[in-house]
Length: 250
Ligand code: ZN
Image (tube, rainbow, N blue to C red; front, top):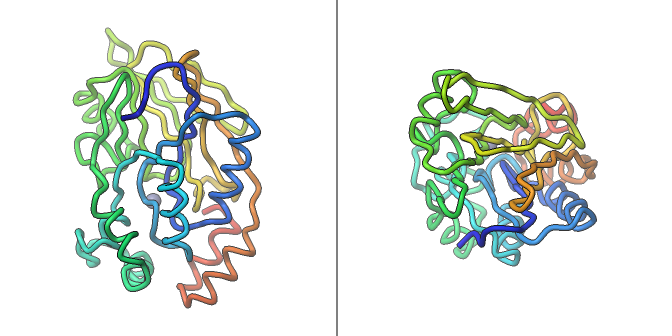
């Protein structure tokens, strides 16, 4: 399903219904050259364009996994498990989306495993909810990782974590724009950062290109029309703090 090996794959995590960010990322990826897209979940939630974003992923035939916001918008997860602002955005999303988007979100698997790579939104121990952001979470994840490489989302922070094959020690890299990371034989887990709501203080959209032939991941940050997304969020009546945070990248 993922086609393997020898391809350049745009890794898209946490798009969060931000169409302007997604289009900017796809233009940048086209300039870099890519053969396929994989997504890491949280396709919707927070942002103003859930149907258009899902439509783009369908056009691109992008395989991927479901995130917590996708589950909430699809009525698969209760809204009371979210902080109030996220719940409010998820309620808006659930009321707004087309039947085709609902079907797409309901059909997302929690884990995709193929060739040498595993895709999951959170961690393999808790695919939808757990943040890959502590040593304990990383160890639980790697204990269940059966492929050399895995790709996650959920934290909205670009990251590469490698586990020493003998020592089990974790080696952590925080890649910046243009950073190229050699993945090696693994086990390694990468997070491409967030397309639609970055949280590392850099407001530019984040993604990565994985070259399955060379085994390198290139991390990219892309300027996009933040004001355009903010205006659409305002028009939709989405919560102010969610609108304002996009400009800060937090
Ligand atoms: Zn997210």
